[in-house]
Image (cartoon, rainbow, N blue to C red; front, side, top):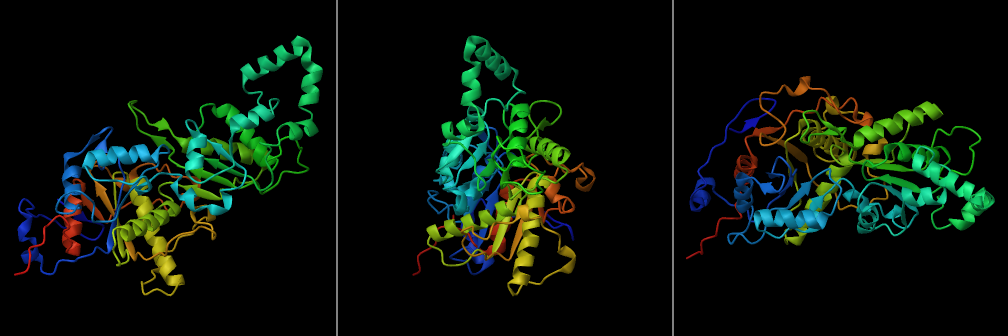
Length: 446
């Protein structure tokens, strides 16, 4: 059963075993789609390394009659941060169709259009393959916190191994060398390749392995505008730009209770910064679901895909398939509100509803310098599936909210437009609504 929410419950059923009858049933068949599809991956298209059979059937409906290529603009949106090319290969194998790496939108993917940062000295925080990810996003001057620790070894006293290392060097008769080596002037001379300047940006891809050490050094850098060898005259209420990817407070694994995610690390950083400075920590950008930035970038990529397919119709409507109301559905509804505000401000024909206006933090908006294709979608519909974390017997509004601080006040936007058993049911519904059936072979005219 497919249900429409919140107004009323409707059903959609169709026998797709013989698709040759569709043109006569639905009349004029569209030759080009004016819509795009966005999918969460885990819980929607598959679980772990195994695709859902319903998802495989759904993707056959989105392909050409030979089943060799997608004919609907599609992108995959996940809060992961890894090798997009590897994930694209997995999805391609699942559905036996070519998938480009840029169709896999991960939490840091919007950084590819942050051109103003690409040549600047940028500090990346993460775990595995941090520099490789930075370079794949277009950054040419990236460093890690390990570089900073090597440049300023006296900072990380939370690391007891580092303490013992310094004591060992001192007892080896090298204390004078250490003092000379790490004097403020010599630090800058020795480590000019990693020294952070006022225009430096900190980009946090995900939680680090050593939270205590990273929290100490990040606070040092934020409080000193990237110069941890300089004592600030006062506690500044502003700091160097800070971008955070993936705000998930927790995630589910094999344990009975949720595990801490990157959002938990951000919560610690926010609390420590306020405790030390008396000021609120400011984010230049928050990337990943449910941020409007990620959904705006997803629309940008759908337009890219549509043009690659040779279509001339604009993306007029978007659909997001997700299994998590607090992330997928919230993000879709937030972006729907963004579209309404955008069309109101830009003089579009879309009706502007005053009640749907919400205060949007700057951290949830693209910088003006971001290079994006025009925004054309008039709406985005949130499609909630039952194959993942959400269970139909849950009361969505009564669950605890795990949203990031900058999304407070928007957490009631968790009701989907459509609720379906699986993505196959949703795809059938959407194709019927738009009279677009790419998998149906056209009959030759006599």
